[in-house]
Length: 521
Image 1 (cartoon, one colour):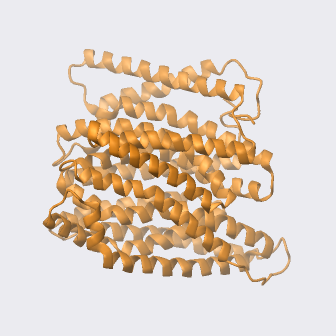
Image 2 (cartoon, one colour):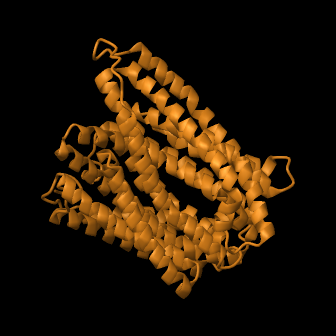
Image 3 (tube, helix red, strand yellow):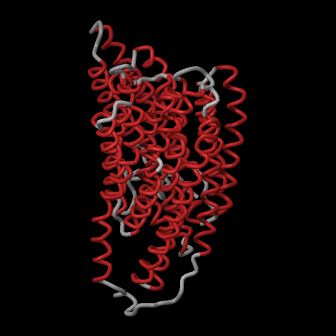
């Protein structure tokens, strides 16, 4: 299996650290969803929270995607060409711009809240919309704190400090859970709304000490490589223009998620809640594969693209895609097989019923297929970000949004709210093909015969392991009349991991001629 792990030892260690950090974040995310399910259930109350949370959720998810491609390459370039001092002054200027932009966004959102909530909730009555507006106001201050927290995390990644930025999600989740369960407010919706803001504050505070430490060490080694401080003015206009294009591109991408949530509210009480639970549980697969690998990949890939080293960039991209496929496919198939006990263990508490478990399990299975595809898109997206082509980001996301909008309108009328999940599978699959075509055209990257052989072997190993695990679970059900969900998860997870490793080792015993990486060019 050398070809899967054939990467720089520092990048491999960093990837392992990020995966561990994201695993901790994932565990707290499960707890967060469990606390929501037990407190709010899977009905209209949860729908109200999700509609109010739509804009803050967009900002929290979008900022790392938008800021990292702008901040990391710019900071690295200025640091290399002009020294640490000027790079940190540029970072301070970016922080001021970000604070200003976030403050303006918050004020506009506060003014437009009733209109925004109305658009996001066509299935709500007047009272439900009023409740959503109140909860939304509780969340608004969190936008400012999460913006600065994201900038701090991007700066830490420049210095290859990946663990703490990855753990901020865990800190946010833990503070949110504590707020939801312990704040002295009678209304659980208000506790949830305030928990969003308190979680964002905690995420910022968690990272600041490490940033101060990194900044102090940078001062001690100030310009050792250049021997002098260069005060050459840095033009931030290209970075701000790129930020604008990235914001527009991701805004178009996230628009379909707003539309999904709005359409779900019109499909009956609890529809938005069911889709939300299924989607966020499925995201685990992408976080531990595509997100973990791509987070470590991006600084290295940016350096290679800027240096014009296309061969190294192709090799880095290939290794990343190979590792993502080897991780995401078996994990995704495992989630699909074990969806019922997963939902029972994590969500079926308090006011969350067994009927809710059935509904969430189906949406979880569909969204998992979409997340596997999205995980493979993540390394390819980092390549696009390294090109600093904001127009390309807008074009690709615009195409995906149009495709999913058309699929939404068709599928919801045929299969109900789960049509929104199927639409995600279709849109992300087409997006993957588009990104692969761009990598081939602009980087000269393509899949060789050996690459296809490896992909087929991984797919066979994961599929056979999943089928065998399903057989093991069927035998367990016959041996024990009503096995507990915990036992099913334990047996199924262990069987899948063991069988996948055995099948993969067997299929890869025969060496391949191509030793360049997972995919060849």
